[in-house]
Image (cartoon, rainbow, N blue to C red):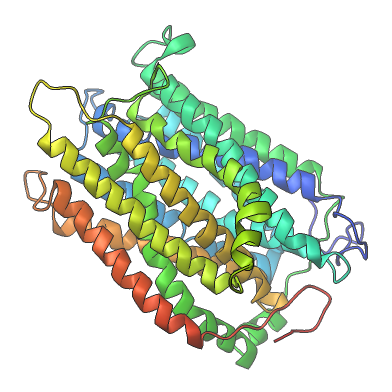
Length: 466
């Protein structure tokens, strides 16, 4: 591992009109890394509620509300550590070295989960994974943008689409595969029950190691933007930096509510799927596998939105990034309205009668995934272009902090409604009604507030444009 200032590395993007040569390595790394993260996350609630053991090796699972709370606390931590990674990258190490070092930490986190099925192993493993995934996340997305110059900046939007496609390519396969390993389905039925968690957490660890190797192999293809050092501190806490943070803060405030709802697809929606008939197209899926609908739809939606839906909408009104985000928020509220309806179906189903079909939850995923495309992808690209050149990673980390704060909101709400015996004060339709109405209110407030947001675009190698 060489320092980013090594003279053998380019320190600025190549002046070319086509795609930068390092992009395939970054996108390949992202696919493998996201396979590891989403595969681990897909089974986390199931592991905590069904497989967790005490120090004597006996089963000691968490209750539903406690598991949901800890799931969102982990998610919050994973998206809070980007601030640490951004500071290391932008001020001290540069993005390349930060990604390599923290990827190794990440691998050790998966190893801890695979070898220790107690609360101690869970705490250690999730802490290391949160540091690793959180630390590299703003660096990888900013590293993508750093490969472009003024000559090929028109390709940035396309590459961020590919980047997000790679995330969901890895996520789709891991969300199907890892729950099957844990549940010992199909070809994995020969795995003994006591070894299933080790295999289920071990496979994502192997993919994270592969991701690290893929990224390292592309080191000579990248533009390694040097860390800012003292200049980074001056710019961050100077007029430009403070103006950037203050300018983006109102947008980020609204986006955090999107994440408070969206990330419940990995917790509350998995718990809801346990009450549904999960036979989809003749396949008996595990509740955790229904989540695979989301990344599959993302891979369909990215070209569909880019080449069909956005151009069609653009014929009727100017489709700015801020308007895309607002429409995405409205779709998220609608998706939770569907989950509210599903909960009503579950409550109305007599005992002994067939459970409602999981196709209803698939419909909810169809809607919330459209919201994700319009909020998440747009916010990712918007955050990069609105950040001063020496603050790319830090501003990306501020955007990712919205994911953290959204999950803090959800975890805090679950803590408030949890009774001492682990039951909930707010259950069923009331729970989903609360979040649906919350998102409706936030969307309406955003529609008025976003009119006053100001934009200022920065690209590596060029001056800021207003």
